Image 1 (cartoon, rainbow, N blue to C red):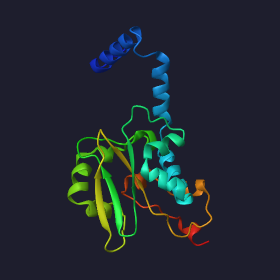
Image 2 (image 1 turned 120 degrees about the vertical axis):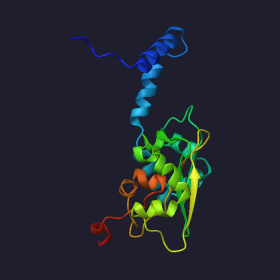
Image 3 (image 1 turned 30 degrees about the vertical axis):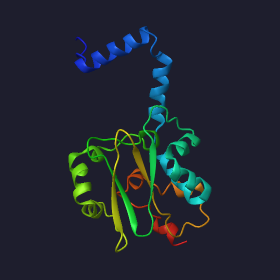
Length: 200
């Protein structure tokens, strides 16, 4: 039995890569490192950035002023990536991130975007009816809270710095980071303290 035919697009990509390597534009090592960097990307990176901001006011100021620098200080290479902005939630203000054109997303600190983030329904409704989207997610905001929708683009990527939940005094960075999910970093959810821990 013969091997299944490879899609034409993959064959073209492999041909292009081979040509670039042959010309010395990139090396196999460069490509391997880029792939490894992509594979290491995870929402846990963004979660630790947030947890550190909750614990360290100086880090918080730096991260809000320059998200790219904060990511670099976490050991994440941002070379070639668009600038990273950090949106600070406050009492009365909640941020929701969307890419209205496609699926621009800060992959270096959040990993791969989920399928719902790339969907036309989310991209359109997040702008048209952000409160309705949050309600469907089960995200209850305090009465009177303004929802600010921010467009992530090819020129600038965004993540959310949510407010620290009550009942977490004395928690470590790891404990706090465990409350910050990918959905929290995009703004469709809020960090939640497990009931068992909240009761302690």
